[in-house]
Image (cartoon, rainbow, N blue to C red; front, side, top):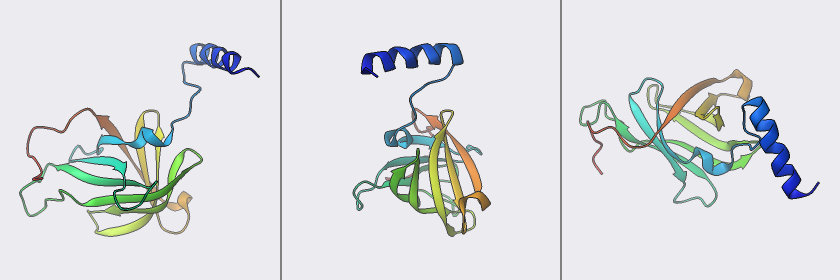
Length: 142
């Protein structure tokens, strides 16, 4: 099928269905994401020490400057993007101080982090909302 025809067809289907034809790509997970409890913001970006991988780090914490502060804690490292999800890595839950196998995907504009032991279907998912900027206070120290 010619590329232009596919584009027109996708636009028509999108208009009728109210959804996008285009699947989220690997870059969609990058950016700032607020936790469901609104107690932390996690920044997802390419890992500095592993080419092609995605890392997530806490860059804002409502408890910044207190003993419960988790500023700077790395909560995810996922090695590859496949089947519309970041896979082959781990996620860390600072609440229970444990690492789990993990998957990160975009669902309806939200970032879904799934942590599991063994197989993915036996895990738990947390949905994060994209934010444009960090809340003003309290601030994590650089």
